[in-house]
Amino acid sequence: MANESLQCAYSQDELQTDRLPVMHQWINSLCYIIIALIILFANSLVTIVLSKQQYTDRNNNENDSRKSFNLLMINLSVAGLLLDVLLLITPGYIIPSSHYEFPKGELGDFFCRLIDSEYFIHILSYTSLMIVTIISFKRWLAVARPHIFQSSVKKFKVQIVITTIWILQPFLCIEFVLGDAFVKTAYPPCRWKYVICDSVLAESVFFTVLEIIRFYFPSTLIILLTSDTARRMQIFQFREDPEMNRSDTRLFKRIAATAITAWLMVALCLPDQLYFTLSVFSVIRPYRYSIHSIARIFFITGSSCAPFMYSLFSPEFKLTIKKKCQSLRCNHSCHHSNRRRVTFTA
Image 1 (cartoon, helix red, strand yellow):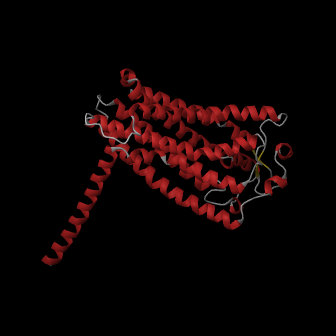
Image 2 (cartoon, rainbow, N blue to C red):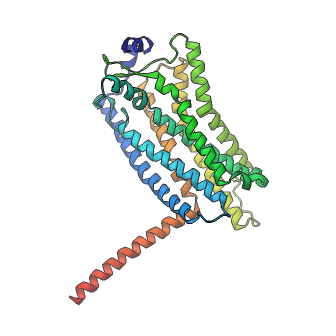
């Protein structure tokens, strides 16, 4: 297996040229530690609040739109939390590859194909992108096709779509499992190889088809949907409509939140995807770690920031957080008041 992997792998000179210096690796790790802590706090908060709202609204049959949106947001938050865990166990993120203890033997090959290849990281990232695409489509329907909007946002329909996305993504990311292999004579032992060794053209076509399906098509759809929705709502015209009622104002803000969040996510993920696309077509040399490390930080941030950004524009989310803070402040004040009363009585 080792000899076959070496035949398809990049040469040792290519793999060891332009690696990040040790100091830069630790700076890179520090960035991921900060990102991981932010992801953990933000997505945990969103998951707890939205789960509570789902529990409160489970008997409310009149608000399928809110239920389906909360369901999408919970899945988006869970994907972000799982991504947080993978940052800890995947080499090159929180723990630099040069200080990572890689498994050996058959377990090493299993580790390289599933963990070091970032297979699960890509599944979660592309799943998040697909969910943002569904949210953008849902917002577009609310504005462009209001007569079919209510029938299309039923909770069971959204559950089917989400389940389909989670089932399909592992197959769309299978390239990462096939492309990473264990080479026991090298360090780090996990080395990327061509999936189709016999034909550069076939390799490029295989990568391009998968990349279009999992990234470029959803990203293009997000931009088109949010742009058309923004045009219809005229959210970039800085004027107030005196005839706009409270419900329209709330919808106006949510459309703006969808557009800003979706565009930011695509913008942050795009450099990393362009890097891999250009390297596959030999426009740039593969494994330029100085470029890749920066693009990867943007990619991880973009893949996990969406739930919290959406929630910041949600009145229900802000109201729940406000009530929770007031409750904690009240409990803290009551605790100190009781302590002073007991001290005075004693």
